[in-house]
Image (cartoon, rainbow, N blue to C red; front, top):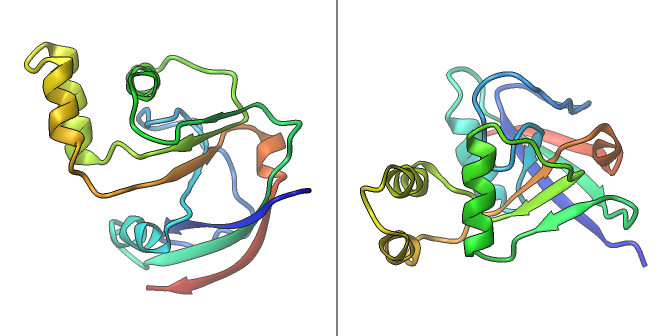
Length: 154
């Protein structure tokens, strides 16, 4: 049975045809089209834009033929994956899903990488952060699982 979900993308424009952008800085799960299943989080992303604050909503149909990496929580494996992606190391997944390393958490990641804090201290600091979610469509094949539903201004 195919599972159908709704995901949101915060932007400054209506994005009816998502694209994978491969320029700019490295992100948590590498290059791709970033969405979330938390509408309030998409609104926050939209509000970071200078002009216009748009939330785009898509229907997402899971496809078992895709190579998907899921992190259900912040784990050692999740931390290592994010550190590698933020350093520009590429991966072979069509979709990556899991918690987001927001600016505060990323500061802790940087502190850990620099050796300013220990791995144990990192986990203590991030333990009380609110839940976040991101799902990144990393390939054209993965983008094919999305169907534009609607957009609205925040």
